[in-house]
Length: 89
Image 1 (spheres, rainbow, N blue to C red):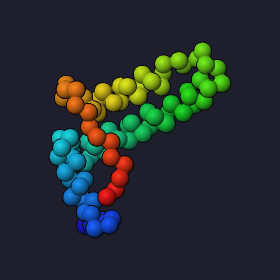
Image 2 (cartoon, helix red, strand yellow):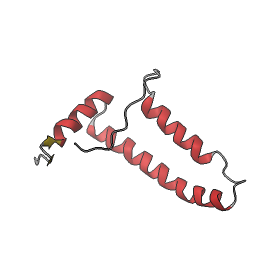
Image 3 (cartoon, rainbow, N blue to C red):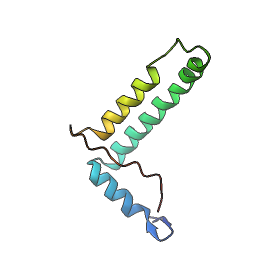
């Protein structure tokens, strides 16, 4: 197995910790993340149409994104939200 390191950080170890923290296997996490990616991708034409005709799809994108955030951030029925960390280090 290849262990990827960025600036001395072990991404495999960080990934394992993340999976453990959210109680998902690698496969479960991949399926869920890809599902969110495809769902968000489907919103692109909706948002383009909404930008041209504001009366259409007034809450579609917002409601979809709220649903994703509720599923990921509050799946254990508490109000604590997960931190979104876009830094690799």
